[in-house]
Image 1 (cartoon, rainbow, N blue to C red):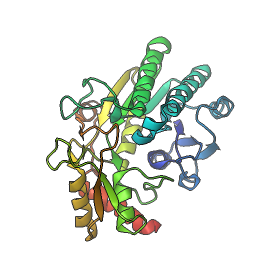
Image 2 (tube, one colour):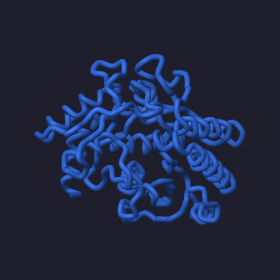
Image 3 (tube, one colour):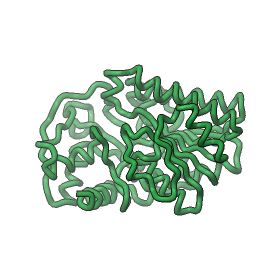
Image 4 (cartoon, rainbow, N blue to C red):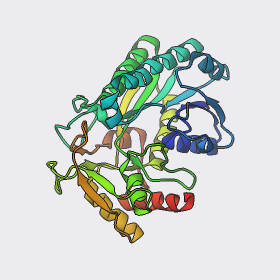
Length: 321
C-alpha cells in the first residue's frame, strides 16, 4: 500500500509509520509540527512539513498515488478546547473537509480516522459500546463527532470506505517512540515529569467524582496495539466496502490514584502529587467495550495491561533522558 499519515510526526502517528514501513508499505507523512517532532518521522517515510488541510501540499502528496489515508492529525486537548473552541473546529473539521475533497479529486477512497471517546460525553452506561449516545461535553469531542458525521456522508454520497477508531487513552511507548509534547497534558508523562523533577509535583484534577476513590477513571490502551489496529483496518477496507466505527480500549478502568500506584510499583518511587480542582469538560468515567473490534477485525490487545503500559513508558523516559 501507498499510505499517507496525517499527524505522522506525532505520538501515535510515528508508531503507525514505523509499523507500516516494517510491513513493507510506502509511507508519506504530513505534519505541521505544532505537537509533533520531525525526529519522530522514521527513516524511509516521505515527510511534508505543512498543515494537513493545505490544498497545494495535499495535491503534491496525492500525485504520488495514495491508496489509504490514516487521519491522525488534530487539535486534541479538552482543556484548550474549552478556551479556544474555534481553533478545534477549524483544524478538526475545516481542514478535514479539505483532506476529503482532495482525496475525492484524486480518486482515493479509503480512510481510517482517529476519533476519540470524548464524542460520548458523560457516559450513561459503562463500558461504552458503539451504540452509546453521543453527547460531547467539550468542543474537542464535538469537533471530532462533526467529522465522523461528515465522513459517513462521504461514504454515502461518494463511496468512501472508512473506519472510525475511538481510542479511550492511548499510552505507553515503543523502543523508539513515546509521549513528548511541547505542553504535556496526559497523565502518565506528567507523572513521570514529577517523578524525575521536571515539575515540582503532579496535580490530580479532582477527587470528588462518583468513583471508587473519587478520581477519574480511564481506560488505557498501549500505543503499539492502537497502531496494529490501523494496519488491520487498512487491510480489511481494501477488501470490504463499508463505513464503520469501533471503540478501542482494554475494557478495564483505572483511577488516577490507581495509576499512580502502578507507577510506584514499576519504578519503586512514589509520585509527588497534590489534589486540585476538576478540569472543565472531564467526564468521571470513560471505559470502552472493544467487543466489536475484537470480533469483527480480530484485534487482540496484547500489550495493554496497566503495568505493561507504565513499564514501556518508563523505559522510554529513562532512555530519552
